[in-house]
Length: 215
Image (tube, one colour):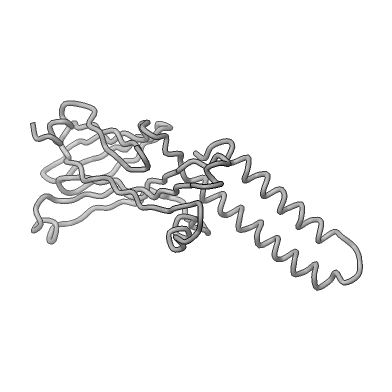
């Protein structure tokens, strides 16, 4: 999840916005009705926007450069039909029926730079989907496909989409991280990790090594 320092900065900022909102609403004096109403609406809108932004950002996890983020365990059910268990860092498990000969994991990345990085904002990711693919182009065109969404929360504000559509914004970059397609073989176990903000897969047993290196 987001780091402690990042969360603290967001809380302080939201508290400041709330303080300004309450000060305007509760203040007295001449000329205030119209100005107070509009400024109050403005600050309330900012407060709601930042709260929703924070809620969406909490669905991301720090990239933890080089550290394992998830495990993928493969079990064959029948020809070109596999059962995949995805084990996250917190030990929760998602299971999927993946069709084809290979699997792929995709993620959305938010990479902070400039002052954001100085303030302690670390690059973060959110796993978005896992899918299957066939070796044969003919199979790929004609057989049933499988793809599953991994992001379960429907946020009112999608920070990644906003940043991706406005890539001119300084100090932040929204990227789509797609790992390579990895062969599925009964009993294979893979580790998923980030290195230099790139999604990578590593075989953890001899079966996975055989699948990748065709031993």
